[in-house]
Image (spheres, rainbow, N blue to C red):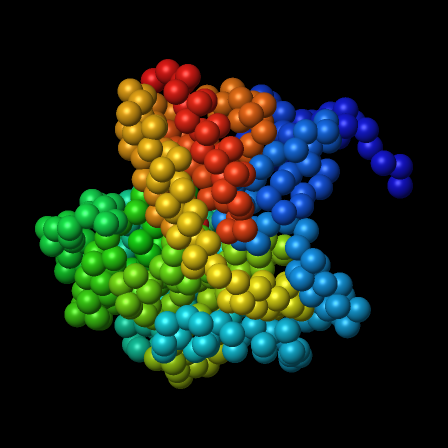
Length: 431
Ligand SMILES: *Cc1c(COP(=O)(O)O)cnc(C)c1O
């Protein structure tokens, strides 16, 4: 096959290819990237950018990592894929054992799937099948938090923030879930017990029809990049127990160290009944997700009417993805990841501090390897994107949020270039 010129790629891209949340009648040109190495993305036009996004929380070790490359090619020589119905393999067994030992007890059953959204679908289905098995089919709704984000498939969408998730557009097709106010108690601030009142009222009122509560522990990601008090999460766990409602923790963004703990549930020292993992699971190499549950759930499901759990993706437990996930977890645990995340956190706090004094900025917040500047008004993404690229950095704001979450291996000079670009460019934005 003949290779394409940059201009041919541009033409095909704008005429035929959907990008995330994008228009094909008013396409915004995408930057053409030819390779990536360490924390740098190499553009086709010769420029190289420092990556501040970890490709949406995933690339925690940076790109083109020799250990991860090696894990993939070694597995490739054994097999790229086999069906998981009736067959099993070492990469999946190893990964399941790892996940069971690393996640909070007593999570010990693992369902592998191919993306975060699907792992959320699976989690919701587990909760529904569990209550059916208990003779409580009326417990079929979910309680979620405003400002939440859990993915783009239909059940996942039904528990996303109703406004930013544009629920009105899918009226009639989306399950009608119950929503509580987003947590108002910020991370690191004295917990005000009144901040759980709305959640408590909702769970009390709807307990008889609720299958589960679903939350992103401590960090609400794509629905607002908000950090809330671990005591709120602990109170959620307690209220779920008191009202006989299951708890689903969506750790797809927070898992594998991003917040400074391996899993954000550890901040509150709680264990959910069901946990979703994805994103950094493979170090950003391949698409893979996992839904873990405890034995209460798995026993319930298997003693129910169906006797089995009704799900089975074609690419379930893909061996290449499992092999690279195993290598990524080893790499993480053998590295001083906690120190690295702490160092990034400290540097982000200092580096982004000047933004707090800008008139167009509402809030600056940092937790672990996540730095967020919330503006007063939505930024003009294509325009600001170009300014960042011209400054040699890759940042992808959305709405009012300009944020950075670099690979953990970033050094302080590169991180300084990222935060300096944010300070310089944001100081020139109006609004
Ligand atoms: C990204 C994300 C998802 C969806 O994962 P996909 O792999 O994009 O389907 C779900 N929940 C959270 C918290 C996420 O950050």
